[in-house]
Image 1 (tube, helix red, strand yellow):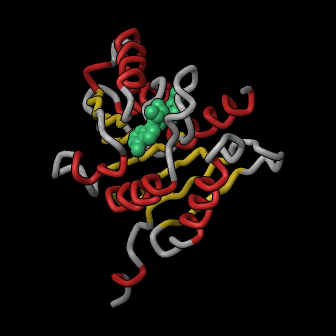
Image 2 (tube, rainbow, N blue to C red; image 1 turned 45 degrees about the vertical axis):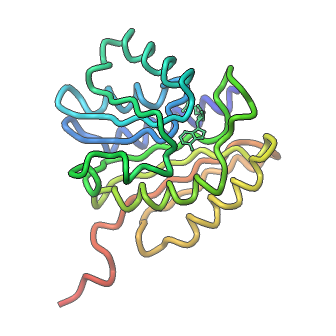
Length: 198
Ligand code: SAH
């Protein structure tokens, strides 16, 4: 658990170097709301965070956390799978995201059967990158250790390996211990290679 927290701190640090007041960001797995809160602080009063989760319990926990911090008015809670990201974001938002944050696996303290899965995580990652603005950041914490986690971890690893033309500064932080969570991050290219040139 100490490890997970440390990775979360690193995620928040990386987000902090990209997300500015007034920005728009997505937490693709709201869970207990730690990442939503970090994003809400970073986007400031004029910014907006869209937080997705499929479980009512997760969104309730997130709502409470944000309410306690007095920042709920910066956040829109969306009870939908992140594989519907593009469909559910207001039309003008896609292409403007400064950050998209994924913390995979199950809800800490909740039902361990309700996990994120490769079949929906992978399309969600692609949609998230589609919706990043140039220079925007995507972060993913994946958990190879829990049941069903290894398959999803491999899919995420493969996905990051497949997108060198859309992402730059891809970093993979793998503590290298069996079953330890791994952090993937990358920034949307400033320009697509195909559209550069003359
Ligand atoms: N970031 C959280 C931890 C996330 S736990 C925190 O800081 O506490 C992973 C969450 O993903 C769970 O709450 C689970 O309900 C949610 N989830 C599972 N499948 C999902 C999907 N398809 N779309 C969005 N969220 C999903």
